[in-house]
Length: 171
Image 1: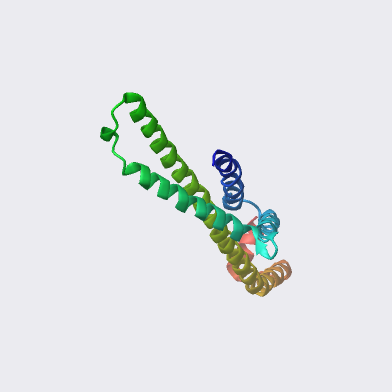
Image 2: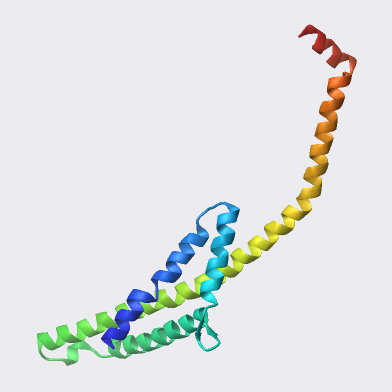
């Protein structure tokens, strides 16, 4: 059990936390697009046949969470008053603390994998919405720029009003 917990502690929480931090940092759109593609490829890596990495990680950390929560609840029901010697009481309290610590670590690992999957989905939707807005704004921006260029060309040929003509002659 000890080596399994070491693997869970060292390898389950860091990847999703790192990827979450990178996805949530403000960054230029091209960098964010490449990062999103990388995260998508990472989460969809086949691990056990056709199962994806995200699903396997969520299942493993979820099982660890259930197991560690069960152990913590079992140890919390034992009263240390029932044990006569101080060393036995200390040993029981150490086991209880370790079980609670493992439950918190498993909770962090499980929730970080769930959060990574959800944030990836939200960032993907944001990218699609940004593309749609850019497509809609492109004709309006083109028309605005064309109008501004026509206005500049018209202003250089003739003044728009007598007042503007008077201002131009004073300068």
